[in-house]
Every structure is written in C-alpha cells, then in structure tokens.
Length: 118
Image (cartoon, rainbow, N blue to C red; front, side, top):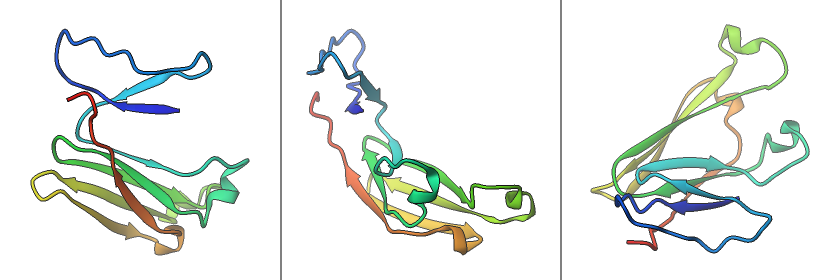
C-alpha cells in the first residue's frame, strides 16, 4: 500500500506515481498510523515490532489495542492499550501503555513522513 501525505490545499491536483496494481491512499496531516509487516495470521505478529508512521502537521495520537486475539479475555481486562502521541511543536513521539502489559510485545519505532507536496 502506498500512503501519501495529503497536501491539504483546496483546488490542488496531485497525481502520485502509481502502478496499475496499486491504489494511492492520501493521509491527513497530524496522523499516526501503526503498521506491522504482513504475516499469514495474527498469532505470528505477537512479538513483532510495530512501526508508527507519523504524518506531521499538528498534534496527533492513536490508541493501539492489543489482546490475546482468541477468546473473551478482553471482557475481564486481559488487554493493553498503548497511546502513541506526536507533539508537533516539539516534534516529539511518545508511547504510554496501560492495562495488562503481557499483551504489549515488541518495540514501537516512529518514522516521520514528510509531505513532499508542500
């Protein structure tokens, strides 16, 4: 998937380089998008690292929910919630996890995606 920072200027036509087999997706400034590399099933992703794609332009946050993925344990609090935050003025990324820490595995790294259309 190709993600492009959205220029946010009304009336501006942007035509990204896209092949016939891909669909460009425009992302609003001030977005945090957590991604992992593709796997066959969610069980394989449990200890994989997460990359937070940061699209700067304003403050942003994302709440990443994680649980065992196979049952109803979430009903009794068996999950973690990780807040991924971007502070635009400081250009700082932070991670704060709450809940059951057993479900927060792997590292979270941030990558800032600058808008090439500005």
